[in-house]
Length: 191
Image (tube, rainbow, N blue to C red; front, side):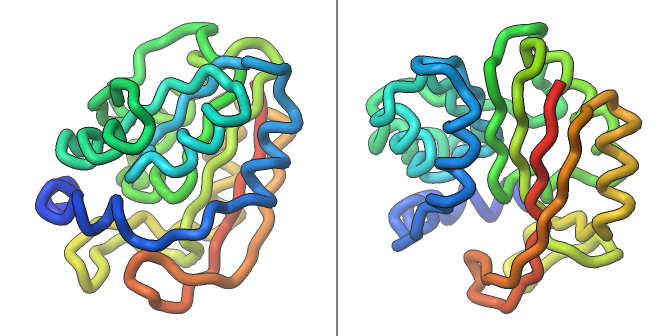
């Protein structure tokens, strides 16, 4: 189970050497006003939240793993909300939502609901960033983590159905925590 992996490996996962997605993160932040309120869905070890906080943004970090949330709290020095994506229950609260390599753990059938929750949580004209591993399947990786590997066209349709707009999906090659070659889909959209 995905949450078991992150709970059991929280310290190692949080302390791994990880380069920040600087170009994507800076582009996302450039579209926000100073001190904007940002929800990070699936903050992992907290590195992206720490960067946004350093830049002066009001970040609300969250993660589905209580153990990983505790590790992130050590880095960023503030509470991390323990929450599954399906539990997001906010309305017009955030100026932006950052979900780097996290929503890919949501079962495909639940993505429309999660995207709708994201849209509702955003303020007017607020952006959302998310990334997925490309493919056309659902399943578990070699570490036992569940992944939804969507094709770009299906992802675009799910985002549109949820009411998000100005959707763009870029693709690039990279790797993940398991160091396996990965084709990534990077989503930018808004309310």
